[in-house]
Image (tube, rainbow, N blue to C red):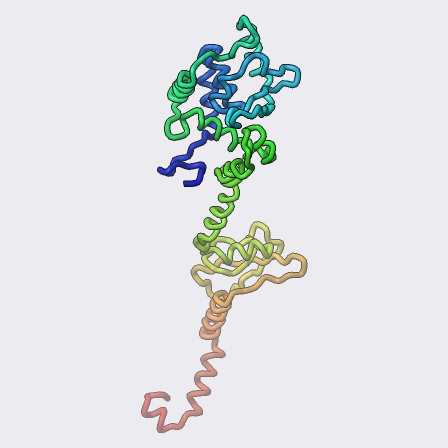
Length: 303
């Protein structure tokens, strides 16, 4: 099985940025030796055996980096330099000053003891799973370096990989940039959900045209009487129609408002009622009846 960022059960083998921060915060509550040991592995991504082999001579305080010997080179002495945070350098300086000899190891533990120290801090920090190991700290260093846009060849040198293809595996881990790209797809999917159409489309169109529509139940885009500069007065002779809103018109920039068919029908009804109430319609009705044949009128009782 080729090496990947996940084990056979599908669990990730690296610590995320938040888990590394929680791990270091818990390590601050430990002794100076445990605190600096955990911090050094998290800040350099070195192997646990490489960290246990460090002495005071491996810390270059002038250049502010640590010189680590790659122990997996099978007899070849290969060293790599990794920069260290300023605060960690101060703690390492205090730890080195407590040693009687500069050549003495900073952490005189066995590999199993160092492993247990890391796992104890992981457990107290609430980190569980396949990533809660010293190897998880190393993998987390590589993933965070890639997500911080550190060049791949530089990450390869810091981790001591012989082949850059091994370092490239860390690019397969999902980071905040990949999640941000995926969120664009989620937004596009959400935009595909159509919103319910508004039932007041005519009102919105009226506002768009510069007219204010009163709440009268009509769809006519007429302006409000409050904003009206002139009004259409009703003929006193016309009968009053219940529900007629007495519309007013406000002409702006030479634009005349549109009148709906419903309002025209109301006006025609008023005119029809007016004509029925006049003698003109009665005379017209009599003239039409007189022109009909006498035989047809007699059959229907029309004089």
